[in-house]
Image (cartoon, rainbow, N blue to C red):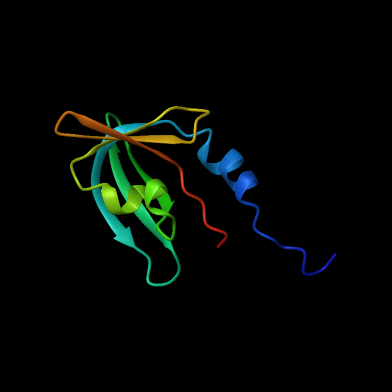
Length: 100
């Protein structure tokens, strides 16, 4: 069926986000020129990774506005919970999803 390409947030999270494990330090964050997505560049022990995050969300889910370079960022495999640790204080967020 033509025209049936509809973004499904639950499927995106299940396939692209849930399987990922992150334990690292945020190096930088970068907004895209258009839309509601930005990238968090994270340095882990043996590699660097990029996490794409939506920032057009309600405040309680807005990890984008909260996280800063040098924060520690954690996400367990199979989970959608992001934990940000800064100066010994931890704040948790559910991974935000945009229909874009």
